[in-house]
Length: 241
Image 1 (tube, rainbow, N blue to C red):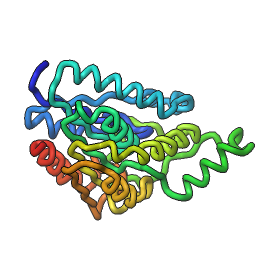
Image 2 (image 1 turned 90 degrees about the vertical axis):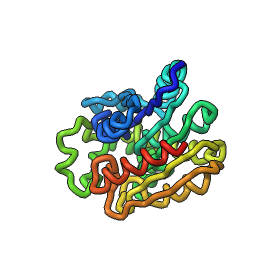
Image 3 (image 1 turned 180 degrees about the horizontal axis):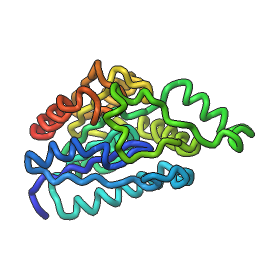
């Protein structure tokens, strides 16, 4: 087992490893090995997401993490959005194996209108009609920054419902997390309302935890206007672990 530092970066729903690349490069510059797996169902085809569940995503990430941990002693994890939820779940189950985590824009709950919509659709005849939802445009202050990144523009309602279930499950077990945690959120986030960050921070049992809001950023924190400051903040936090 090597003593070198490894950081696993987990992207968000409908996104791709491209979304985590700036953070990966920032950590490689200080000698970390940065790895960005692609979550099951992701890529370019929305149809691949239709059969995805929170259990499929988590089993994939857990297996990926354990393979890395088998050869590396110092493993850190960073997750954005859905990736943030998976990072928290991983820490709930493997706190003894992770040096520290950072979660960005993690949605324990989605916007209230989305939560109501998916319940109505999933448990009514509408589920046969309203099967997908087009991704919104208010994910970042300057949309041009992400227009060339690999992502899926249509979101299956069944997969959105899986994220909602995952958020509720993760919230119940936040007190199991005792490792260092950095919680970061954009004040303008319309996908994962900012109160999610406070809920996460307050639910942790960690003695070393930090909560930071960025007032100019939206949901895609890794490419938004505060991206560089966020990179530096995470590096500083991990180096102190």
